[in-house]
Length: 432
Ligand SMILES: *[C@@H]1O[C@H](CO)[C@@H](O)[C@H](O)[C@H]1NC(C)=O
Ligand SMILES: *[C@@H]1O[C@H](CO)[C@@H](O)[C@H](O)[C@H]1NC(C)=O
Ligand SMILES: *[C@@H]1O[C@H](CO)[C@@H](O)[C@H](O)[C@H]1NC(C)=O
Ligand SMILES: *[C@@H]1O[C@H](CO)[C@@H](O)[C@H](O)[C@H]1NC(C)=O
Image 1 (tube, rainbow, N blue to C red):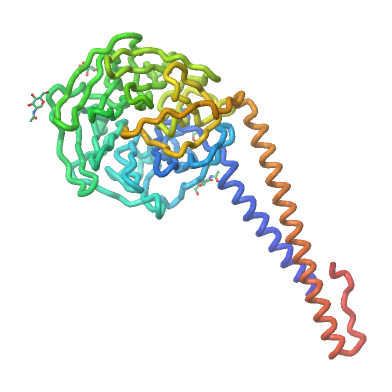
Image 2 (image 1 turned 30 degrees about the vertical axis):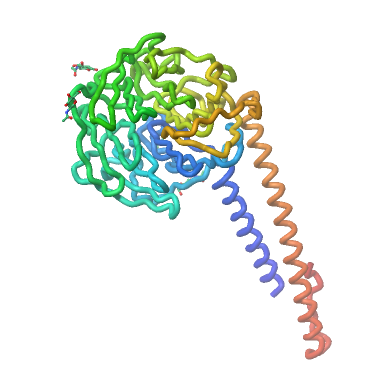
């Protein structure tokens, strides 16, 4: 009887320890697989990372779907990754898709499945309130690989890409409310391409830059699509024109007068050595900005989103994730000096890369420059130890309380028994 009780306590202890470790594992100490060709989407201060493929392999990362909470301050060498992956997801493991946020919903378009036995639907919807996926076919809109989707005022723009045979240059314009669609004016549209850069400008033009067709496409010319009047304009650029490239990332600067690009590759072996450029959209002049902080390795097939004053870059190819962080933050609040930083400080009006009417000029004084990511493993290690110790203390307390209650229960029972049973009933005295 007592053995049984002890055994029960032991089991409860084990279950509790297991729960604790699972909690720790699923929240704080995920070191997610390195990946590229994923998507990143900011919805209500959460940055969702979906899909992608593992370096040197057409296989999927173990954590196919993650998010980072950007409502709290954190350091990039100690990111809390939340694992949303599920083995039963209706979305196949994939890469080269594009996502965008429409209110609480994330739309996923195109992409290519990593499994030969599963094909992608042309689009999916993820409800961030219920954490549920739904297939959302839009008849007539093909699934394309390697595109950047743009969203503005209930309208989704899907340009070019690779629908499985060759690159195209058509533009699908989808109404996000009723999912009806039309094609854009094709006169003067850019050459067919995929893996280009695209940014919505405050004047409602979308700028398309670089990309890949039968090689990398130069950035001496950029293309502007006027979403109000449905026509294309070609612009020659000047200044320090970046080398031809694809799979780079692009965002609108905080001043809304510039486009910032980062990384990318020049050919299938060469990652862009000069990763960071700014295009002044008033005169289409490229320049290399002044940057301080710890310069990270250049990356390609990563993703970037503007969050507050930070160009927030996730994963990609070209860096070692043992020594460098999977999330990079470039503080772009000072036009005269961008700063690579490892500390994220939320401000109250987090913005996505959609232009908004308010212009913010946050001060950078509260930004703590932390040395670098070499502390990485050490810090995480200390954290693991700390939570194991805390866990063990909690467990010990629960165990002692459990034993005490059991002891009391036995004492009561013994007294009762003593009242009703003959005196010679012996109870073992090792109840502690
Ligand atoms: C490729 O993936 C397989 C399993 O999917 C794994 O066993 C192998 O180590 C991976 N190779 C590389 C280079 O990552
Ligand atoms: C994340 O979730 C997936 C699916 O449930 C699982 O296979 C993977 O191991 C998880 N990763 C971690 C670090 O817990
Ligand atoms: C290669 O792409 C360029 C544009 O980037 C185009 O002018 C040229 O016709 C293409 N060549 C082939 C063989 O497709
Ligand atoms: C398409 O754009 C061209 C200019 O690039 C313009 O001349 C033409 O009228 C447009 N077509 C339509 C149907 O709007």
